Image (tube, rainbow, N blue to C red; front, side, top):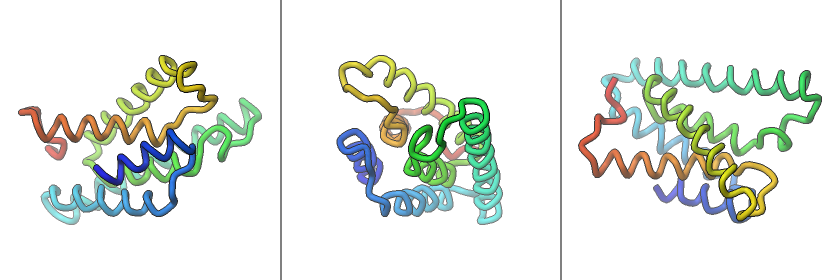
Length: 153
């Protein structure tokens, strides 16, 4: 939670996040997932699927940005911190949970940005920060409620 909170705070405040928070998030998310996985093969299988999904999403965004929008990709359409956060996030959950949460974080980020764009005076979406904020809420809700566990396969 502290790592995610730091990412949220820095992304909103400075629009830059210390680089070491992303490997730390990868380590912490990966550890949680590994501890909840039924075996190391299951963990690696889900991690590989999530890695391929994130890579596919980034590749589609890259092609769209470069060839259709004719804009620069890195640090214009998507920041390096956002990409690193995608991969850290992908290590944290089984594939079905990851897909649902990934789509949920993107929708949440879009809605919050559209609602608070003028009030926060932002030109670009603090995507890693908003995704981190969403995950803080989801993890806290999962801990205090009787909802199905995030790591149920």
